Image (cartoon, rainbow, N blue to C red; front, side, top):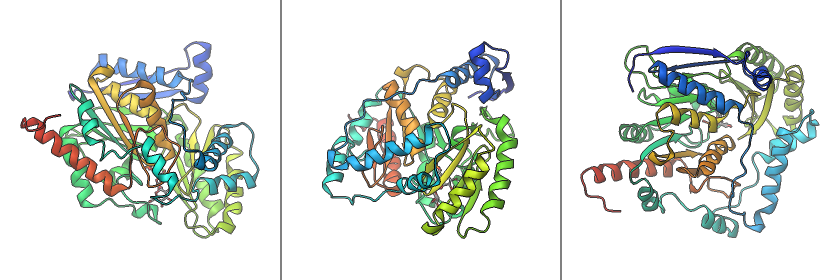
Length: 392
Ligand SMILES: O=P(O)(O)OC[C@H]1O[C@H](O[C@H]2O[C@H](CO)[C@@H](O)[C@H](O)[C@H]2O)[C@H](O)[C@@H](O)[C@@H]1O
């Protein structure tokens, strides 16, 4: 991508009434791209993406009936996150439990039937490779639980050197983006590769690869106006939770994570109470449940799916015939990206999970070590096909 940069800033306040209402949620969008024409284009896409209120319900294969309880629990959790009015603390705690439900072990009937509807991306590699014929593959990778294993201490979720080498090789052949709930700089510090795109804060902080100077090819920060209240809430949450052993509030710049992985379950109601109390003063913030974490985000219509769409457009791949996006992730927040791909009938979502889960992903990988194998296989396949050895 050409690196002559211009900065384009726009505000949505002066738009139509609908846009005015929307702008209460998000008023400032900063976009930097390589030339004025594409700047306008990318800005327009971002605007369109922000104002799109429709939520797609893809034709996800029906889960096996024996898993019904788990899927009903997920639905209840979603309802709790999205419905208006403050839920009771007991409901919060139920949701905290539901966000880490009991697992069906691999080889259980549940697991076996799930693998039929969501086969292994390694086993289906030939199919995936075949469907990329004539298309440019773009890789999207979540970080925690995908490139690094889930660990007790969020600050020590390091990725292995072998994984780093695999990601580096993939990025040599395919544009590659890291899409994470972490702050962009923090996830960059973990990954340590300058040649990638980074979408931190659940996609609310996007930056293109550095060209060696200080310039960046793409910058998109749709939640920049929320920075002051996020910082304010961060301080309040740190202060309110400081005496709850094991609680950890992590600042992810445009969003916050309140970790309860190391908090005794008996203390979860107390933690929930404190968080609820702080958030009651901030109606412009919303909360969702992640893996033993409460995620606090601005109430804007932006998520990892929007970040994926933004990046594809910014990379010049708005024509779905030319591109095969592959998105690999393990988290509920990755489902927004899987849904986008399913809706567009474009590319594949790959869920990283050993256990059956409700998902819009087409394929699965069991854990980060399988993710690494998949990335290595992509590179070997690309090298072989460049040498003309690969027949599909
Ligand atoms: O979008 P992601 O890259 O998957 O980030 C989601 C959250 O990941 C991190 O928390 C999770 O991983 C930690 C380290 O393994 C684990 O201790 C924690 O329980 C998990 O929830 C990160 O710390 C959060 O800020 C991210 O939002």
